[in-house]
Image (cartoon, rainbow, N blue to C red; front, side):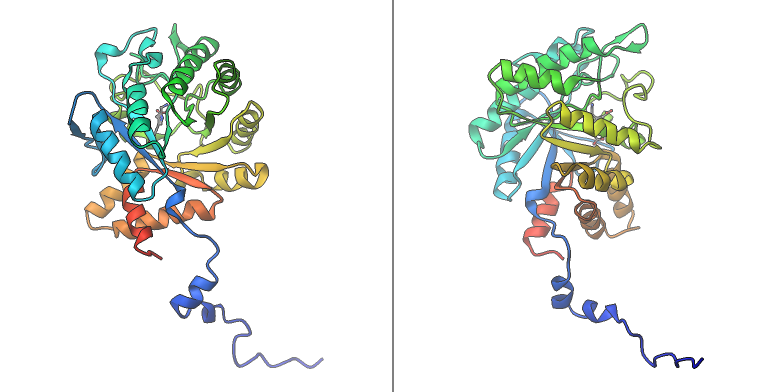
Length: 336
Ligand code: PBG
Protein backbone atom coordinates (compact mmCIF):
# COMPACT_ATOMS: atom_id res chain seq x y z
CA UNK A 1 0.00 0.00 0.00
CA UNK A 2 1.29 3.33 -0.96
CA UNK A 3 0.63 6.04 1.40
CA UNK A 4 -0.23 9.47 -0.01
CA UNK A 5 1.94 12.28 1.09
CA UNK A 6 -0.01 14.76 3.19
CA UNK A 7 -1.03 17.80 1.13
CA UNK A 8 1.31 20.72 1.42
CA UNK A 9 -1.61 22.98 2.22
CA UNK A 10 -4.91 22.63 4.13
CA UNK A 11 -7.67 21.35 1.84
CA UNK A 12 -10.19 23.43 3.66
CA UNK A 13 -9.50 27.03 4.52
CA UNK A 14 -12.62 28.46 6.19
CA UNK A 15 -10.59 31.54 7.06
CA UNK A 16 -10.90 32.57 3.39
CA UNK A 17 -14.54 33.46 4.08
CA UNK A 18 -13.65 35.39 7.23
CA UNK A 19 -11.02 37.56 5.58
CA UNK A 20 -12.96 40.76 4.89
CA UNK A 21 -16.13 42.40 6.24
CA UNK A 22 -17.82 41.81 2.86
CA UNK A 23 -17.12 38.08 2.88
CA UNK A 24 -18.13 37.77 6.51
CA UNK A 25 -21.42 39.52 5.78
CA UNK A 26 -21.98 37.18 2.85
CA UNK A 27 -21.91 34.09 5.02
CA UNK A 28 -23.63 35.60 8.06
CA UNK A 29 -26.49 33.29 8.96
CA UNK A 30 -28.66 35.46 11.18
CA UNK A 31 -29.48 39.12 11.53
CA UNK A 32 -30.37 41.06 14.66
CA UNK A 33 -32.95 43.69 13.88
CA UNK A 34 -34.67 46.40 15.90
CA UNK A 35 -37.87 44.45 15.17
CA UNK A 36 -36.57 41.73 17.47
CA UNK A 37 -36.42 43.91 20.56
CA UNK A 38 -39.10 44.10 23.23
CA UNK A 39 -38.40 46.74 25.85
CA UNK A 40 -39.43 46.04 29.47
CA UNK A 41 -40.02 49.24 31.48
CA UNK A 42 -40.88 49.92 35.12
CA UNK A 43 -43.73 52.18 36.14
CA UNK A 44 -44.13 54.22 39.32
CA UNK A 45 -46.75 56.56 40.72
CA UNK A 46 -46.73 60.33 40.49
CA UNK A 47 -46.09 62.83 37.76
CA UNK A 48 -42.78 63.65 36.13
CA UNK A 49 -41.11 61.18 38.47
CA UNK A 50 -38.11 59.00 37.74
CA UNK A 51 -36.47 56.66 40.21
CA UNK A 52 -33.23 54.78 39.80
CA UNK A 53 -33.08 51.03 40.30
CA UNK A 54 -29.89 50.49 42.26
CA UNK A 55 -29.26 46.93 41.11
CA UNK A 56 -29.88 47.80 37.45
CA UNK A 57 -27.64 50.75 36.54
CA UNK A 58 -29.12 52.68 33.63
CA UNK A 59 -32.67 51.43 34.27
CA UNK A 60 -35.22 53.78 35.80
CA UNK A 61 -38.82 53.66 36.89
CA UNK A 62 -41.00 56.31 35.30
CA UNK A 63 -44.38 57.79 36.11
CA UNK A 64 -47.05 57.27 33.45
CA UNK A 65 -46.50 60.63 31.73
CA UNK A 66 -42.77 59.98 31.33
CA UNK A 67 -43.44 56.41 30.24
CA UNK A 68 -45.58 57.76 27.41
CA UNK A 69 -42.68 60.01 26.39
CA UNK A 70 -40.26 57.08 26.57
CA UNK A 71 -42.63 54.97 24.48
CA UNK A 72 -42.79 57.71 21.85
CA UNK A 73 -39.00 57.92 21.73
CA UNK A 74 -38.65 54.15 21.58
CA UNK A 75 -41.17 54.00 18.77
CA UNK A 76 -39.30 56.71 16.88
CA UNK A 77 -36.15 54.61 17.29
CA UNK A 78 -37.91 51.64 15.71
CA UNK A 79 -38.87 49.66 18.81
CA UNK A 80 -42.27 48.06 18.26
CA UNK A 81 -43.13 46.52 21.61
CA UNK A 82 -42.92 47.87 25.14
CA UNK A 83 -43.65 45.72 28.20
CA UNK A 84 -44.95 47.27 31.42
CA UNK A 85 -44.08 46.34 35.01
CA UNK A 86 -45.54 48.31 37.93
CA UNK A 87 -43.71 49.23 41.11
CA UNK A 88 -46.40 48.96 43.72
CA UNK A 89 -46.34 50.51 47.15
CA UNK A 90 -47.08 48.39 50.20
CA UNK A 91 -50.37 50.17 50.85
CA UNK A 92 -52.01 48.74 47.70
CA UNK A 93 -50.91 45.18 48.51
CA UNK A 94 -53.78 43.23 50.03
CA UNK A 95 -54.34 39.50 50.61
CA UNK A 96 -57.07 39.46 47.94
CA UNK A 97 -54.75 41.27 45.46
CA UNK A 98 -57.73 43.29 44.21
CA UNK A 99 -55.45 46.02 42.84
CA UNK A 100 -54.31 43.53 40.18
CA UNK A 101 -57.57 43.89 38.23
CA UNK A 102 -58.43 47.46 39.19
CA UNK A 103 -59.07 49.24 35.86
CA UNK A 104 -57.35 52.28 37.38
CA UNK A 105 -54.19 50.54 38.56
CA UNK A 106 -50.82 51.82 37.43
CA UNK A 107 -50.43 49.33 34.59
CA UNK A 108 -53.92 49.87 33.19
CA UNK A 109 -53.56 53.65 33.33
CA UNK A 110 -50.23 53.37 31.52
CA UNK A 111 -51.69 51.07 28.84
CA UNK A 112 -54.46 53.56 28.08
CA UNK A 113 -52.11 56.56 28.06
CA UNK A 114 -49.63 54.88 25.74
CA UNK A 115 -52.27 53.56 23.35
CA UNK A 116 -53.87 57.03 23.22
CA UNK A 117 -50.64 58.81 22.38
CA UNK A 118 -48.41 56.22 20.71
CA UNK A 119 -51.00 53.92 19.17
CA UNK A 120 -48.60 52.03 16.92
CA UNK A 121 -46.34 50.69 19.63
CA UNK A 122 -47.59 47.32 20.87
CA UNK A 123 -48.12 47.23 24.61
CA UNK A 124 -47.31 44.03 26.46
CA UNK A 125 -48.16 43.37 30.10
CA UNK A 126 -47.18 41.07 32.93
CA UNK A 127 -49.79 38.86 34.53
CA UNK A 128 -48.90 37.60 37.99
CA UNK A 129 -49.98 38.61 41.46
CA UNK A 130 -46.52 39.34 42.87
CA UNK A 131 -46.60 43.15 42.66
CA UNK A 132 -49.92 43.18 44.57
CA UNK A 133 -49.42 40.30 46.96
CA UNK A 134 -48.07 40.98 50.46
CA UNK A 135 -46.35 37.55 50.20
CA UNK A 136 -44.54 38.49 47.00
CA UNK A 137 -45.84 35.33 45.31
CA UNK A 138 -47.37 35.08 41.85
CA UNK A 139 -50.43 33.28 43.23
CA UNK A 140 -52.42 33.30 46.46
CA UNK A 141 -50.81 31.72 49.50
CA UNK A 142 -53.02 29.71 51.85
CA UNK A 143 -51.41 28.06 54.87
CA UNK A 144 -48.01 28.42 53.25
CA UNK A 145 -49.14 26.80 49.99
CA UNK A 146 -49.43 28.65 46.69
CA UNK A 147 -52.88 27.59 45.60
CA UNK A 148 -53.52 27.08 41.92
CA UNK A 149 -57.14 27.38 40.83
CA UNK A 150 -58.09 30.35 42.98
CA UNK A 151 -54.99 32.12 41.69
CA UNK A 152 -56.01 31.38 38.10
CA UNK A 153 -59.41 33.03 38.70
CA UNK A 154 -57.64 36.20 39.86
CA UNK A 155 -55.15 36.10 37.00
CA UNK A 156 -58.00 35.82 34.52
CA UNK A 157 -59.61 38.97 35.96
CA UNK A 158 -56.26 40.71 35.64
CA UNK A 159 -55.96 39.61 32.01
CA UNK A 160 -59.43 40.85 31.09
CA UNK A 161 -58.81 44.21 32.77
CA UNK A 162 -55.59 44.66 30.80
CA UNK A 163 -57.33 43.71 27.57
CA UNK A 164 -60.08 46.25 28.31
CA UNK A 165 -57.40 48.89 28.85
CA UNK A 166 -56.07 48.16 25.37
CA UNK A 167 -53.11 45.81 25.82
CA UNK A 168 -51.94 44.09 22.63
CA UNK A 169 -49.98 41.25 24.22
CA UNK A 170 -50.71 39.66 27.57
CA UNK A 171 -47.74 38.09 29.33
CA UNK A 172 -48.77 35.56 31.98
CA UNK A 173 -45.60 35.04 34.01
CA UNK A 174 -47.21 33.24 36.92
CA UNK A 175 -46.65 29.56 35.95
CA UNK A 176 -49.95 28.39 37.45
CA UNK A 177 -51.56 25.38 35.76
CA UNK A 178 -54.37 26.00 33.32
CA UNK A 179 -54.11 29.77 33.20
CA UNK A 180 -53.64 30.12 29.45
CA UNK A 181 -56.78 28.17 28.61
CA UNK A 182 -58.80 30.01 31.25
CA UNK A 183 -57.60 33.40 29.99
CA UNK A 184 -58.24 32.51 26.38
CA UNK A 185 -61.83 31.53 27.17
CA UNK A 186 -62.45 34.64 29.27
CA UNK A 187 -60.99 36.92 26.59
CA UNK A 188 -63.25 35.40 23.95
CA UNK A 189 -66.28 35.80 26.19
CA UNK A 190 -65.41 39.41 26.97
CA UNK A 191 -65.12 40.26 23.27
CA UNK A 192 -61.31 40.43 23.25
CA UNK A 193 -60.57 37.46 21.06
CA UNK A 194 -58.00 39.52 19.14
CA UNK A 195 -55.68 40.02 22.11
CA UNK A 196 -52.54 37.90 21.89
CA UNK A 197 -50.90 35.91 24.67
CA UNK A 198 -47.17 35.46 25.07
CA UNK A 199 -46.95 32.73 27.63
CA UNK A 200 -44.00 32.64 30.00
CA UNK A 201 -44.05 28.93 29.28
CA UNK A 202 -40.57 27.76 30.22
CA UNK A 203 -39.92 29.95 33.21
CA UNK A 204 -37.25 28.66 35.55
CA UNK A 205 -36.90 29.23 39.30
CA UNK A 206 -33.92 31.52 38.91
CA UNK A 207 -31.57 33.63 40.99
CA UNK A 208 -31.24 35.90 37.98
CA UNK A 209 -34.54 37.64 38.82
CA UNK A 210 -33.05 39.30 41.90
CA UNK A 211 -32.65 42.86 40.58
CA UNK A 212 -36.16 42.78 39.04
CA UNK A 213 -37.71 42.07 42.41
CA UNK A 214 -36.01 45.25 43.68
CA UNK A 215 -37.31 47.14 40.67
CA UNK A 216 -40.95 46.20 41.32
CA UNK A 217 -40.68 46.37 45.10
CA UNK A 218 -41.25 42.65 45.66
CA UNK A 219 -37.91 41.49 47.02
CA UNK A 220 -38.50 42.45 50.64
CA UNK A 221 -41.93 40.87 50.46
CA UNK A 222 -41.13 37.46 48.98
CA UNK A 223 -41.51 34.68 51.51
CA UNK A 224 -39.65 31.54 50.55
CA UNK A 225 -39.01 30.76 46.90
CA UNK A 226 -40.99 30.04 43.74
CA UNK A 227 -39.94 26.42 43.23
CA UNK A 228 -43.45 24.97 43.53
CA UNK A 229 -44.45 26.71 40.30
CA UNK A 230 -41.31 27.72 38.38
CA UNK A 231 -39.12 25.10 36.68
CA UNK A 232 -36.09 23.28 38.03
CA UNK A 233 -32.95 24.54 36.22
CA UNK A 234 -31.92 20.93 35.58
CA UNK A 235 -35.06 20.09 33.61
CA UNK A 236 -35.44 20.13 29.86
CA UNK A 237 -38.27 17.70 29.10
CA UNK A 238 -40.47 19.38 31.67
CA UNK A 239 -39.95 22.72 29.93
CA UNK A 240 -40.95 21.19 26.59
CA UNK A 241 -44.12 19.75 28.15
CA UNK A 242 -44.97 23.17 29.60
CA UNK A 243 -44.55 24.78 26.20
CA UNK A 244 -46.67 22.11 24.49
CA UNK A 245 -49.40 22.60 27.08
CA UNK A 246 -49.49 26.38 26.71
CA UNK A 247 -49.65 26.19 22.92
CA UNK A 248 -52.48 23.69 23.24
CA UNK A 249 -54.34 26.07 25.55
CA UNK A 250 -54.15 28.96 23.10
CA UNK A 251 -50.86 30.82 23.58
CA UNK A 252 -49.81 32.70 20.41
CA UNK A 253 -46.18 33.05 21.44
CA UNK A 254 -44.02 31.32 24.00
CA UNK A 255 -41.16 32.57 26.10
CA UNK A 256 -38.10 31.00 27.67
CA UNK A 257 -36.82 32.73 30.78
CA UNK A 258 -34.10 33.53 31.81
CA UNK A 259 -32.33 33.81 28.47
CA UNK A 260 -28.63 33.17 28.29
CA UNK A 261 -28.40 30.21 30.70
CA UNK A 262 -31.27 28.53 28.78
CA UNK A 263 -30.32 28.98 25.12
CA UNK A 264 -30.52 25.22 24.63
CA UNK A 265 -34.19 25.36 25.60
CA UNK A 266 -34.81 28.23 23.15
CA UNK A 267 -33.36 26.21 20.31
CA UNK A 268 -35.30 23.11 21.17
CA UNK A 269 -38.61 24.94 21.58
CA UNK A 270 -38.20 26.60 18.19
CA UNK A 271 -37.19 23.38 16.43
CA UNK A 272 -39.92 21.25 17.95
CA UNK A 273 -42.89 23.55 17.94
CA UNK A 274 -42.14 26.10 15.21
CA UNK A 275 -44.09 28.77 17.08
CA UNK A 276 -43.06 32.38 17.67
CA UNK A 277 -40.41 31.97 20.37
CA UNK A 278 -38.93 34.65 22.62
CA UNK A 279 -36.35 34.82 25.36
CA UNK A 280 -36.33 37.14 28.33
CA UNK A 281 -32.85 38.45 29.02
CA UNK A 282 -33.67 39.04 32.66
CA UNK A 283 -32.58 41.63 35.19
CA UNK A 284 -29.67 39.58 36.56
CA UNK A 285 -28.26 39.02 33.08
CA UNK A 286 -28.50 42.75 32.45
CA UNK A 287 -26.93 43.57 35.82
CA UNK A 288 -23.99 41.22 35.23
CA UNK A 289 -23.10 42.78 31.89
CA UNK A 290 -23.51 46.31 33.27
CA UNK A 291 -21.48 45.57 36.39
CA UNK A 292 -18.61 43.96 34.53
CA UNK A 293 -18.60 46.78 32.00
CA UNK A 294 -18.78 49.38 34.76
CA UNK A 295 -15.68 47.89 36.29
CA UNK A 296 -13.88 47.96 32.96
CA UNK A 297 -13.72 44.15 32.86
CA UNK A 298 -15.60 43.71 29.59
CA UNK A 299 -16.58 45.98 26.73
CA UNK A 300 -20.22 46.67 27.63
CA UNK A 301 -21.46 47.47 24.13
CA UNK A 302 -19.84 44.46 22.54
CA UNK A 303 -20.98 42.11 25.29
CA UNK A 304 -24.51 43.48 25.05
CA UNK A 305 -24.71 43.02 21.28
CA UNK A 306 -23.12 39.57 21.41
CA UNK A 307 -25.61 38.48 24.06
CA UNK A 308 -28.52 39.64 21.88
CA UNK A 309 -27.16 38.00 18.74
CA UNK A 310 -26.92 34.73 20.64
CA UNK A 311 -30.70 34.71 21.01
CA UNK A 312 -31.17 34.93 17.26
CA UNK A 313 -28.70 32.11 16.71
CA UNK A 314 -30.57 30.03 19.31
CA UNK A 315 -33.76 30.34 17.28
CA UNK A 316 -35.55 33.17 19.06
CA UNK A 317 -37.80 35.46 17.06
CA UNK A 318 -37.21 38.20 19.56
CA UNK A 319 -35.93 39.07 22.99
CA UNK A 320 -37.16 41.06 25.94
CA UNK A 321 -34.19 43.16 26.96
CA UNK A 322 -33.53 46.17 29.15
CA UNK A 323 -30.86 47.05 26.59
CA UNK A 324 -33.48 47.62 23.87
CA UNK A 325 -33.03 51.41 23.42
CA UNK A 326 -29.24 51.20 23.37
CA UNK A 327 -29.17 48.17 21.13
CA UNK A 328 -31.66 49.79 18.73
CA UNK A 329 -29.33 52.76 18.36
CA UNK A 330 -26.33 50.58 17.60
CA UNK A 331 -28.26 48.38 15.16
CA UNK A 332 -29.50 51.43 13.30
CA UNK A 333 -25.96 52.77 13.14
CA UNK A 334 -24.98 49.60 11.27
CA UNK A 335 -23.41 47.46 14.01
CA UNK A 336 -21.89 44.19 12.92
C1 PBG B 1 -43.11 38.19 38.03
C2 PBG B 1 -41.98 38.36 37.09
C3 PBG B 1 -40.62 38.20 37.37
C4 PBG B 1 -39.94 38.62 36.24
C5 PBG B 1 -40.88 38.99 35.29
N1 PBG B 1 -42.14 38.81 35.82
C6 PBG B 1 -39.93 37.78 38.61
C7 PBG B 1 -40.26 36.54 39.29
O1 PBG B 1 -40.83 35.60 38.73
O2 PBG B 1 -39.95 36.50 40.47
C8 PBG B 1 -38.44 38.69 36.13
C9 PBG B 1 -37.89 39.63 35.13
C10 PBG B 1 -36.45 39.97 35.32
O3 PBG B 1 -35.76 39.44 36.20
O4 PBG B 1 -35.97 40.81 34.55
N2 PBG B 1 -43.92 37.14 37.92
